[in-house]
Image 1 (spheres, rainbow over the protein chains, first blue to last red):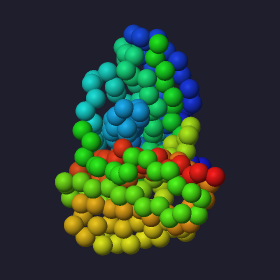
Image 2 (image 1 turned 120 degrees about the horizontal axis):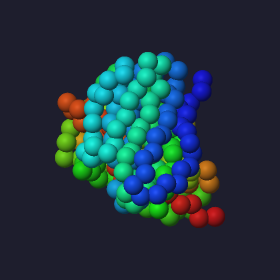
Image 3 (image 1 turned 30 degrees about the vertical axis):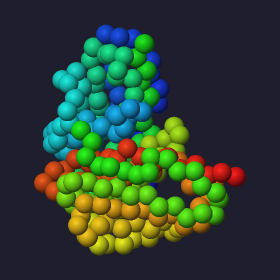
Image 4 (image 1 turned 180 degrees about the vertical axis):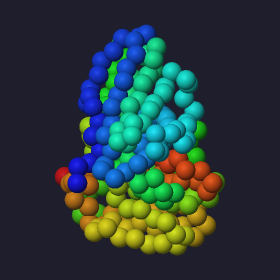
Length: 113
Length: 111
């Protein structure tokens, strides 16, 4: 069974640009969650999508948005990039039940210059 | 903000030693999960715990869900070089569905 796939693995953008990251969940998983990982803040929850609907949201500004498609694949978008957005962005999928464990991809390393 | 206190932040041990790390919170958790992250990769699930008092093993790893539902520990027995990495505890708070993470424990094994 293929794991969670994230593309691209690395991205370099400049301030003010926007970026879109992609995530393909494990087959059969309907929930996709996004996390931002930085050395200072650790793993911070961005949002979760289930059946194409945002089900949970973290405390990030509106510049961070996402969506989920009918095949459960998800994209995350960050607009008007800031230097502080440089981070490892991790996607995780699960079956979507209350105790379903998350399975993570290898992340997209975003560098904003 | 962060609601899980994970300790220690780092550990330096000799190969073959046992390791113990833990997480505590002021909130009640419904689940406790332990992940390991290697450089350049995403966290990999090691053990999932769902009931207070539950003790679960995965090879040389053993984890327990605290009776108060506010803490969990992870033990690694007879450490080997491939155990090096960052270990994260995570859990879902009662009434919420998002996963909250600890700050991680960086394990280094001295040759």
